[in-house]
Image (cartoon, rainbow, N blue to C red; front, side, top):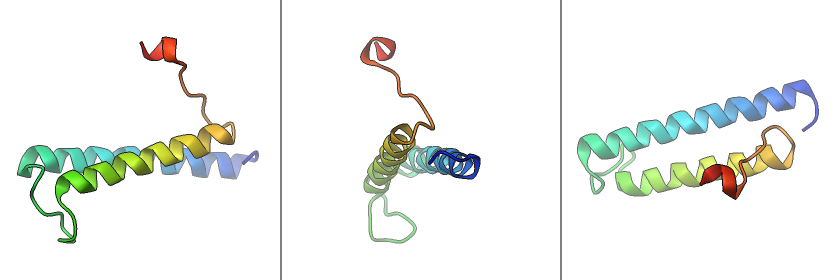
Length: 77
């Protein structure tokens, strides 16, 4: 993922996943964690968990390819 197009794509996906997590969390707050998602297959809590997983996945991919640098434990603390 060295070229500019791939870097931009990874950062775009990262932004999209952040937005999807924000939207899922907003729905949990508005409707409750046990309410059904729009597709009816999952609860909003399950949808939120999936969005967290998707965000973790793109963070790992972007870090692996040098697009972002993740904080170390000291920075997190």
